Image 1 (tube, rainbow, N blue to C red):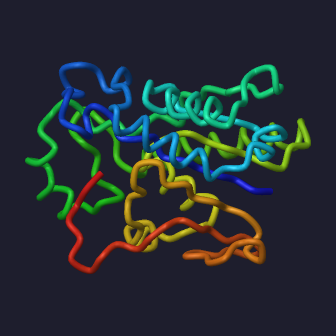
Image 2: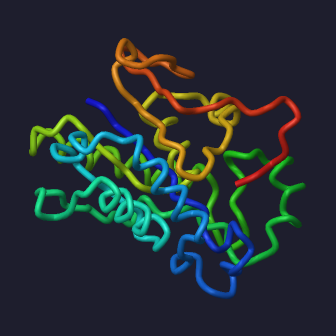
Length: 219
């Protein structure tokens, strides 16, 4: 099996054009720069990968725009028998409606992985729903006999997915640098990858980076 997880392009919240707390995080679209990022990354992907793959995406607008732009850039559409499975469990972590900066001290005290934002989630909560998604994905893969998966989603979802699939510890999770916009993280047999940050049995992961020693808490 080969699994590719792609973070969405820059959004209008990332660019400072819209505030998620005022506009609604699920409705935030890609910025102009984000659209260009998606097109540039898509040009490096293989169209044939998608023709026999299970394709999933987060229900958030920026993730849906990302996968649609990927397919458009590769000149693929539903006529190629590509169906996009939208799954609510792939949504970005909910950081609540409070001031995130004011909660960073508490995150440092209670742990990056465990701290639950006021009115929101912790990475551990995100991990639980991503684990449920992986179980469903594996069953669908067995049922359809498809060995390729492409997922358009978010930074925290990608890290939780890798943590669950590669059986990482909490310390290993904490060591992962959040993927940049349009980064593609691949999970596949380690012998088929050029380099793996983490391995588990026959599996390897490519496309992740480790945090710097002086990193600060971030979603």
